[in-house]
Image (cartoon, rainbow, N blue to C red; front, side, top):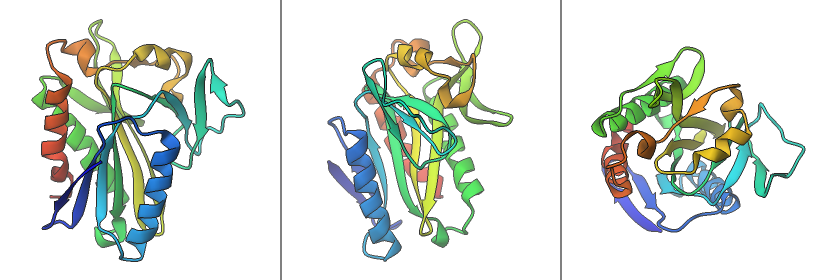
Length: 215
């Protein structure tokens, strides 16, 4: 894990090059949240990817342990069911919302604006949809298709979990579920829309602009 400290913001930026299991990520975040709440660690932002896994939020508790061969992990974040896996960039936040105007809605809005801005840098027009969580764009068939999802949790005044952006992942996993509980919805990725864009380009844009959220 590469760690970059933005001293003027007192936020650590973690970058994992290898896949991080969902269990490992949750354990790490919960420890960080405990330390941050006690003032013993800086706030943090973490870029990573997971091995293939379905995760459920508080609004959807799965009684089964797998979908085909892919495990299901019940978690405490917001939202329903989604998929994570290679080629999908995860950005987790461990942020002391008590020190940031205690405005969770503003923080979520800033996350949405960040995703939309980064996608615009890649030549992708993205947008929010009324009463639906996440960020959408038009797929090649002209359908509204989700390209990024958000799911957050607050504990001891610390907001954590985060967002996912489909870069060059296998979208077939989404066909086995109703992503985020939305029936008959479409899902797309950067690679599906912009085949010439390299994954490293996407990573650079996401990392370069991440601290716009806190400006």
